[in-house]
Image (spheres, rainbow, N blue to C red):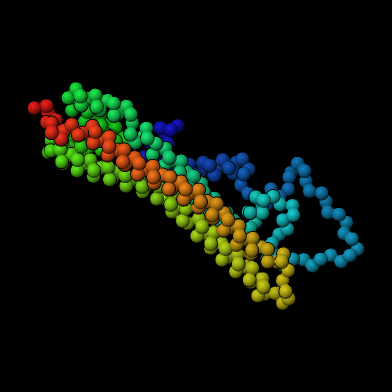
Length: 282
């Protein structure tokens, strides 16, 4: 499973993230996790029928823009009613894609994946035996970060050690840019989620003030609850998505920086023998 995910991630990161997000979303929908107003009542324990009203006059009906009664709603149903379908879909998409990207990047930045210990041992053994062509073929066929850097250095070694070091630096910068490019989408979601939440805050407050503007008398708090709940819930959900994404981005960015440093140390140790020696053994 891990090899399949790594292969798909290497071929098309966007497609891999979308597929994983789609699978998670479909599984959630099948298992009945998706928020819905139907969750306000338990099908096995239906709500009791309303009691016969007292002779006292019934209260006036709430206006069409007022929030629905939440006395019999779960917290999840209340959040869904406050968000509405479009905010719900937006936040679900960002959360699922964000989780998929975090998982993919954690797998892609594992030390054994970018710096395989077996490659280091076998490459060094080939160099000690002066089997330079075999060492080059081993590095060239290895798709890891370290393998690509070593292969670039071995390719330019015939032109001199300085050329080889320059080639390794260029490939290392390219591989490092690929890793940073992948995690940049996590930072994008971490920035976009609170902005959508802020948009919902403004949208909800406008809805609440519209109730005030269109009311001929002082509006009741229940009439303002719908817009205020939209404003507050979109804000908290946006922050709930953004905070883990920012933490994950900072962790992965530091991991990539450490990987880049380790690659430089390892390649310098393996290729440093060619600084004064002839790779052909002459």
